[in-house]
Image (cartoon, rainbow, N blue to C red; front, side):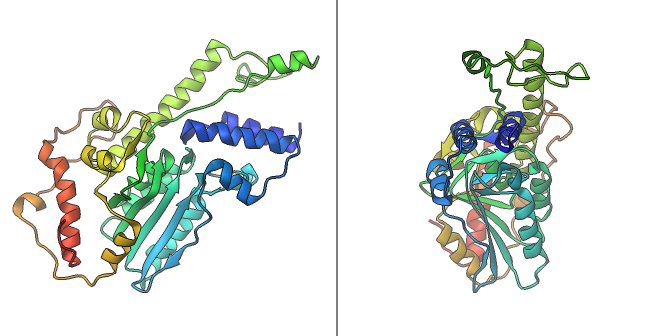
Length: 333
């Protein structure tokens, strides 16, 4: 089996947290690569709709800007760099470097991604969330944070979306390619000799059986539950709210995302940088109600009981974002 056959099989056997139309485009690119077509980086970007590669920068105000652009894939080299993106490992290295740099006062995650594979997301998301209180970390959907990208953005201390942007596509998918009809037309029959009852389960040379489908669905459900719980912790809302109100797999426009509590503010990327660049004024102590510790959100099970939040709690996230702006001298809208 040639190199791209292995890559295609890898892509098909991997659970994805990505917009489904982009998963189909990636499969198309892989198939054409296998057929001998050579894509330039520009052609890949044009097909996937990815923005040109952004590099990590540091502004004069010592703000580290870390790009999360294109498809997020755990082992990007396994995809032969044909999907135009980056890996969680690369993002993590940049994030740790910025956290360890004493000259960096704030970190901005500059996100424009349709999502990617699920591998490495939980670990990176936990690392981003654990940094809260150490340095301000602001994620900006500039302009799309879909699926895996939303998973990561939701773990930041503050999550912002540009006015024309979108966030969401919360969910997981897996693909199975059935090429039995094509092989039959070509007069080819593949015989798989294997050891282990499920060793060749879900292979593309046979029709997908119910038992194999159930196994794949179980994996998708497990990663989907992990996704919901991560967003629940990152956004400090019950899992049921994530499940029922955060789009159910659809993308959500900026203003609607703010109303649902999926983000903290609607703001341009440049405005975020300008706000973070302003010298901090005296810290705002807050009222007794604002400083009252929140009850933790249940984490042990997706269906575990979670504290009931009043509507004022979700609106308070917007108030917190506005208060942060006031600390930097930015007047309320």
